[in-house]
Length: 251
Image 1: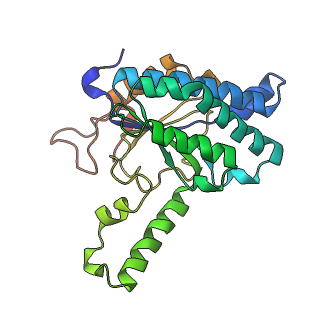
Image 2: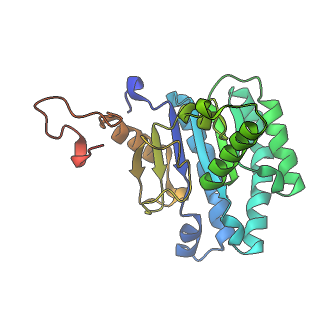
């Protein structure tokens, strides 16, 4: 069981491995995405019960449009199903839904469900559940810098005001703390254009489990690993300690 005093405030998850999970079972890729949706439901519930304040999941990237049209369409249909099934429970549990990304480009029925989710949970003050849809971190940063440049050219902003805080305020995650922990499932060890700016000092936990197999217990194990880390944010280790971090970690 995790230590309540060391629960990360913000957890990001790259939910990877749905297609490989399905292929290993001789099933179509959409079966993997459906199983992944069920896994996401359980992780959202567990994160909220453990006291995580912000949970951000990478659901559909700006690069995922390259996939087969049938798969893309199926993913958005599953999104509609998820909202229809889970919104009432999310709202009852005081979860606040927020969407990161240019989700207006999704199919109309998906956009309508997402807007309904945002509006229904707008006044909730429990865990913030952030769903990254049509999201790419480079696109997010570019959009943010473009808005700063437009304000500077219009005289609304002096270049002397440009700092890290201003850039952070122009991102989809404005107002949120940076993620303390990022988890990636599926055995890959990369960010794949997820929260690049925000993860400068995040801890990372990589799981070999495909996302549909990533159970609440696996989530707790990731949090237990995080609890054992020493976060120094670039500072040197205390005098007399060459390497106090587990597994040789040095920032």
